[in-house]
Amino acid sequence: MKKYNVFKILGIVIALTILLSYFIPQTTVNYGSVAKGDINPVSIIDTFSNSITSFNVFISQFIFILICAVFYGILHKTGEYEKVVNQTAVINENNKGLFVVISVLTLGIITAAIGDIFPMLIFVPFVMAVAVKLGYKKVSAIAMSVGAILIGSTGSLYTNITNQMLSTKPETYLIYKIIILVVGLVSLIGFILVFTKPEDTKLTVSKENGKVPIIISFISILLFTILGMLPWNGFFKLDLFENLFKDITAFKVGKISLYNAFVGNSVSAFGTWQLFDIFVLIAIVSVLLVITYKIKFDDFLELSAKAVKKALPYALIIIIANIVLVNVYSSGWITTLISALAGKKFNLFTAIGSAFISGIVYPDYSYGLQFTVSTIMYTISGSKKYYDILAIAYQAIYSAALLISPTSVLVLIALHYSDVKYTEWIKYIWKYFLILFASLVIVLFVAKYGFTVSSILCLIIVLAVSTLLVVRRINNVKSTMPKKEVKVEKKETKKTTKKVSKKK
Image 1 (cartoon, rainbow, N blue to C red):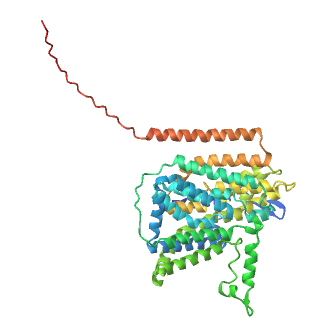
Image 2 (image 1 turned 135 degrees about the vertical axis):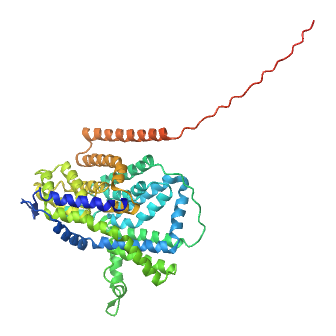
Image 3 (image 1 turned 90 degrees about the horizontal axis):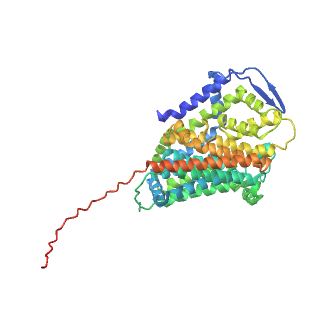
């Protein structure tokens, strides 16, 4: 059944992690030393134990899914959410391609700016609902929402953990990050527009009032997410918000800080927000919606319980996917593969291959970076000159790999939400992924070595293949279009005989 397809895929991947742990020996990396050891198998019992570890580590993401579910439960309870979706679709009905462009650019650029993919998940159900309303297939709706978020991550302009671990600066390879972002987003838009034809739709305009609070709630969440998570000080060297936050928290009545008394110590200044701060933001917006639409407390509790129950499978996807992470890390066999791939001397293929493997087995960026990059750093001897290119290569290839990874949390949640099989998604996205991957490799080689003959030839090949795919698609569309039958009416001509009188 499609309903449980995602969990079957995760079950297969977990089984593979257990099986491989019985054949590949472990490798440990500790403070600069790499030591190969014996086989360290992960048993089924260990896997159950690792599920507890996964839950404890990723509980914040688990709770985030539940909070998002309650938020959307409130939206549906108002009776106005469907009207907002319909109205948005009506506005874009005559130019559906424009909706694709706006959605992909908005989600992609904001993700690249804040450097985190998970908070953007709050907007995915809305974008997908409008896309389906406009006649797009579910796989296309996933591509223009979750796909755009992952592409935004490939060209992330500021990733704090990457900068800390590899001692890189925000401006390092900035122009190439922007190129990666532009190439990814433009190619995704082109792929959706060329390879997806939306069905014809006839939407009716809803004239009822009451939709404004819902529109304001989405805009507020979007703006505060940008304000809160955009690294103002780290990227722009702007400490305005941090200084303002210090002044607000320092204001006291007697010996008590009013801010700490009413808000507490958990919420931080703009520019330093984490996923927890987004919890609080969505919770506040949800409460305001309950008050605005006068939803009774008993009804709120009932809809919250239903929403949480419905969202549990999506939250469990996070925990189950990250069992793979815990399994491969605890057994140590993935470290063996990456250290063998790295060798003793750095090359760009090492970074690309390691990042791709990391994207398959590590659903979480921060842990994947930590485990993978530390292995490369301690395996390869020599200078630290490759750290900059390693940073940009890892984030680009890792995020691109999440488009097809069987452990990609955002993709799996979207697939389960839209009741689409994993194989259907791969069948749809593989052409785009190959073009994207080849393009990223070319950009990375140019960033590392400059414009060489090989990189130019590769670029020409990628462009030629892309053009060929587009032309082939257009021809296929033309061949499947129904031909108009032209009826030729034959006009009957009546023969008339003229009498000619001869004059004598």
